[in-house]
Image (cartoon, rainbow, N blue to C red; front, side, top):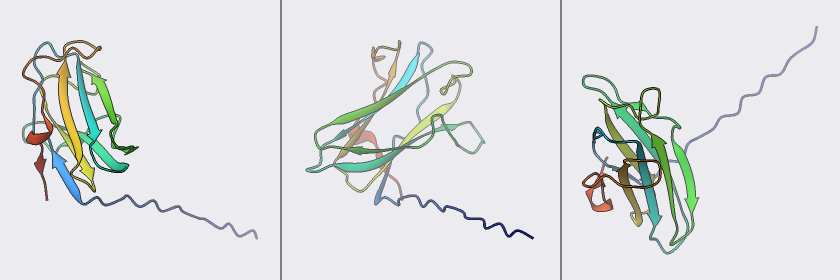
Length: 137
């Protein structure tokens, strides 16, 4: 009789000191893409995680594709992620969305904007600036 040894890798997720939320936002009728960006304004490299959620009325919020993204970003640098709006796309009209940043430094500056195309043409009035993000417990 052969004995089979099973091993299981346990992955622990990092717990960050701070959690910031954009609050809920909707999509205007001419939205083609939703973009979030983060600038590292800290004195050193920072790691952080961004998760985008979809929320319907009287429904639990769910994670939007591509799911939680974790980054390590050098000081003074920025990164972003933009995804399409439409049926069978990560962002679907008719729902609310929330961008959540988890980090160990409040020197990370998150921003969300909604584009009318796929080339960074921001729809006026749709940008959520860093000062609007709310610290969540």
